Length: 349
Image (cartoon, rainbow, N blue to C red; front, top):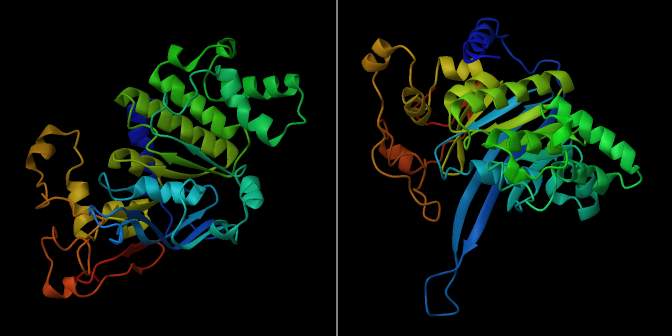
């Protein structure tokens, strides 16, 4: 699929978008007030000095329905990856609930969590670093199968691995090669095959295309879309590129300093961003038309991203917000609105 087809598909989805994409769909993931805080040792000679608390994720709510893609965007340091890893259990949640089909993953015993791992898999940002350099491609893809289904014969495992390699666009004759022999895009296909081999219901994609060339990014994104349609997957897709997020996502969560500032269906959010931070992100997206690109007004944000160890009082965005008032320093806004479009801002209706 070419880039022009990608843009065409995106335009068609915008034109044909239903009023609500969640009607009649099963709720798979329901995240309620998720917090992930880390204790940072105090820089003091006194052993009794209290550690500081880094609020990587600070009370985020989100939902994911069957067959849907939730895009998560925000600048570096906003807590996107920590949010994703807390869902899988790679980092421990401090507070809140991560409900998977009604069961709270944060309160499960280790044995129960292990069983749920078959249903939730993850694709990582650096395709080469996420693969064991001492294992062949076949062994890497087969590892989850051997772990969860030890009674499968070698012939059955090999057959499933070859079938999955073909599904993600890898030739079966490379099954005995090692990760360093492949390009970044091919390594990411290996990672996708490894995540899919257990037939999960949901895959968390932690910036899976940020380390790839633009042309390869389009191939990987389109591959994920095709696999999602074929297998009925649900995706949590983290990225910096808003154009990619708009193309692949049904719903979008915008994060800033560990907080959700805006969330809603992709078409509604991109057509009418309401939060000042979302508007600034949208204004930075390049437009293919040179005349429109020169004429557009970019909304520059003043100042630097505050430290999550000492975030601003009230609204965490107020120190960089062009419309902030004294009220914003006193009260922390919560997401208000509907499933179609919700925003966390005291000054936006």
